[in-house]
Image 1 (cartoon, rainbow, N blue to C red):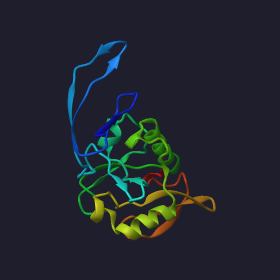
Image 2: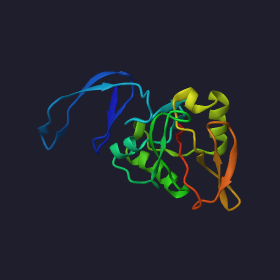
Image 3: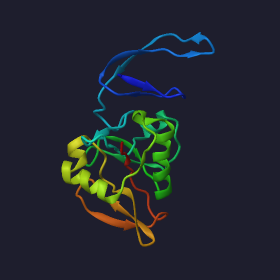
Image 4: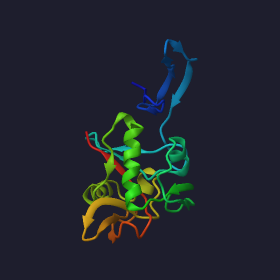
Length: 186
């Protein structure tokens, strides 16, 4: 299957190929639309990278402003600009901890990659991702200048993790805005 379409009309590519899409509602058929599904090469554009670890577990990069706008989401705390040194050129959204968690729920609502079990990644999951791939900007073109939130609680705060150098820290939920990676485990 080249692509899936959610009930709300969001198309997600499943394989690099060309396909056509048409909709039928109340007996009325839309025009047929040609769709080219391509690999996300620049995460600063209107796409999100879905990294399959080989076991079917998917990770997302922190979304660009363009991507989040394209799926109609306003769950964010502003954005920062990457200039190509620690992330691809583009504007990337920042999130406090609660909005980072809500981002994953937005992916569930939009059925990203045909899945509805997206959640914020744990410290161990991001550490495993880093240990396997190294710097995620170098490996996959992800924005890494700012650390990523995790769902791992420590004391009154949550662990944050650098996908640039593999280090972790502790941040209070309302004190900072960071990047967010959501994970989906089959």
